[in-house]
Amino acid sequence: MNNKDSAAFREQYGRRLATQLCDQHFGARPTATLDGPAVLRFTPIRQVNLFVVQQLLAQWTQEMARLRSPYFDFEAEDVRQALTQFMNTLSRRIKLARPTFEPLLARAITDTLAIPLDPAATFEQKLLGGQPTATPEQLRDALRYLDTDKLFYQDFLDSLPAGTAQSQEALRKRFALYQEANYKHHQPLARLVEEFNALLPLTAEELQGAAPAEPVVAAVSTPDAPTPVVSSPPPAPEPVRPAEVPLPAPAVAAPKPAAPASAPVTQSRFVADAEPAAVPLYEKLKAGQPATAPLSEILRPERTAATLADQAPKVETLREAISINQRFSFINELFSGENMEYHAAIQHLDTLPDAETAKRYVTQDLAGTHDWSRKDEHVNKLLKLIDRKFA
Image 1 (cartoon, helix red, strand yellow):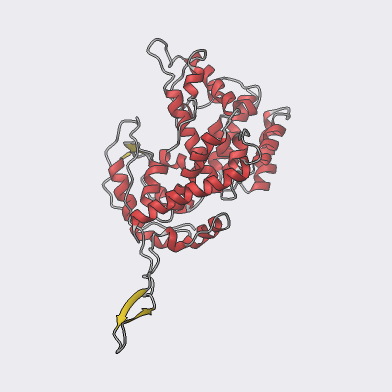
Image 2 (cartoon, rainbow, N blue to C red):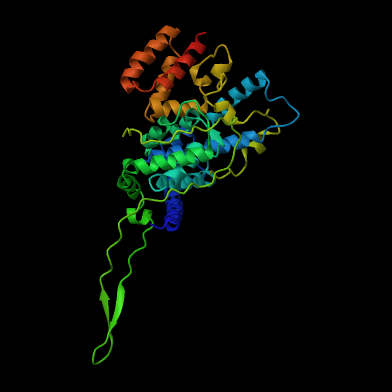
């Protein structure tokens, strides 16, 4: 496989499909916009939609970081609370026009096609994200944006020593060894090709960068004149597993690194760049809105004050307390991507009279309906928010 040709083809295919899908959606309504729920269901390929959301949040983080100023105390508790509430309110006002949405969509398509072909780049870009060091818990937070081959990456994170921060280089090496031992356990490439082919023609050979075979013309001399003879093209070579070449990622601030684990990676069990908006958010807000710490800090699950519900002793409604990151997490992990079912459940919880009734509805009714037997982490976050509401 020619990696360079394959990458170029993915980029081109991503742009073509993004243009086609946007023509279909915006063609009759060029001034239409998309909100968060509309983005999550824009294409029938869930992974593409999730990667759009991931880019959107990354862009949002950069925009909010620019609001910092040396003249104000952004670490003050009341400022954090106010800004968290502001962020939660703003997250329900996502508004994407075609010029800003189409580049995000094209990149999401390109990155989705790269998952089975370049797992190392996917790990570095989508999970590691340029962090100089990271723990398995920090990396696992990004799994919410993976749908294709999710269990493959989840199994790698399960093989890492819990709570131990490792350097970016150490994690890349460990993943390379894991990939070498488990490459056969990827989701079949044919399944992904089939999903995209239903939207815009695509073959596995094109995706893998295989050049089309050209007819071989041989000149054969005859008594009269040389006559060109066309022979059959040689059979196509067997596909080769893609090289795992990690792509560079921007460096961001991260916790102080701990000593990398020296234990070698063994084969573990296997279970199963966003384009900026036309008018940056910070340009719209910096004149009249307070500034805040970067969104990456606000949304980190390991922080003790990650959401308004964690910071304030009491919240009025769950709908207002759940941040954009939590909302996408709950929709994806607890409600299988069904936005309407999530909103119906939260709305019902807000009508219940006490914490006991609300928790019983979560642990019995919702858990049974949606099979939350392996979703303890997300269920506990929801129960914690219920405690805050009825505190």
